[in-house]
Image: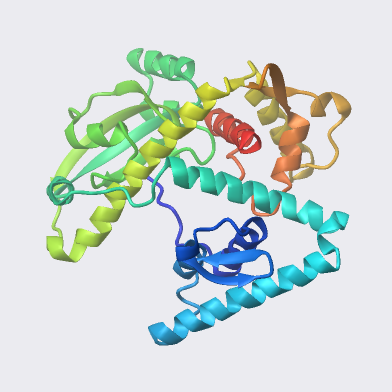
Length: 356
């Protein structure tokens, strides 16, 4: 609902891991004009160097020439370690293969994302100036977040019969979906995801609008209670952050479109009731023990189908057991288990990860 922006670049350790993986997967077929070093049968290319440098810039604070030399030296040392590990057969050990698989899968997914969704999306000066002009006013907004269109319709019907907005917001919104009563306070344009942000700017006052679908966030009813002028710093002091806000919004839209194209290509289909089964499993586990029991589902629970997809000529399924395994991966993003749309989005993403 509220626009979330990506975190800062990955920490140095994560970037070096990506570099090591790139070296593991690279070979002698690289463009000779872009090769910086060869170590055994591996190559270090300009692209490898730039990708790691982007994520490790804080670690190399020396003057540019010295920093470049140190980073290249570290990449060469890493390649030497990999060559020696290959020579003594470490790659064939089960523990190494098990640890390597999720890293390779994650890097493959990231590589596909980079191909489908360029990070450097252009933003015009006119777009920056328009957002700056919009942010001269803020709006007092409240919302009702719903897990489905049916729930949003039911919430709208209760409001039409005279129910209080705050009560409906608390009843239909899951924990963490919105503040108490659905009251978001005063927000500047650019704070909410589309199409909520357009109504923040232009929607009539004291009028409940919706249901509105927001991709990846669920269904909403929105009401604007008030608007007021807002003093801003000069545009020159905000130009960079406004440009980043617009770029990140465009990247989000491109990512959602790319995900939809992948879902269509592999005919990814949520199993009716699948997300609800996952919701029930995790919430019961939390209620019974105070934490999510990820390790002890019974056979029937593990076999619950969450989604279906077509890989080649055959239909395949994604089960609750596979979801529990995926959630056990270190660093794996977890859904908000109180929100069915968040669970549905996570299931689709998990299937796409496997397809990648």
